[in-house]
Image (cartoon, rainbow, N blue to C red; front, side):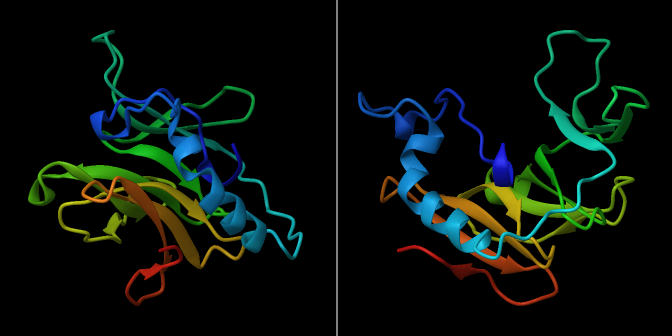
Length: 173
């Protein structure tokens, strides 16, 4: 899915509504504006030579959970991290962004980045009491865009983060 957007069934009780069937529907108006801005230059993205994916809550005990990479032909599967969700390659192939629950934030998700071998893990977001998810890279690999669930207001806010430094910037109200 483009920029890490995925349609998935609702599992968050705050989102249950007769009119809402997926997280994407909740964010559709904001994301269409954002994606239009990010792709306005029609920049061709460099494809990664590997695919990143997560495996969580496996009922098969012999299978490990966490973040993996695999060749496009299905060969050479590597388990690079024992935790993490929604891994996304940077367009330049140098980093993988992902979300992970953190104990210091009541097990709500924060956004992290790491190198393709699973090393040099760095936490990028520190939104106390809010769920950060669905990281997406800018075409130049310098920025991450992600969703922050503001549960008191029953809405998402989109943020942009310069991975080279600086605080997150809200892109939506």
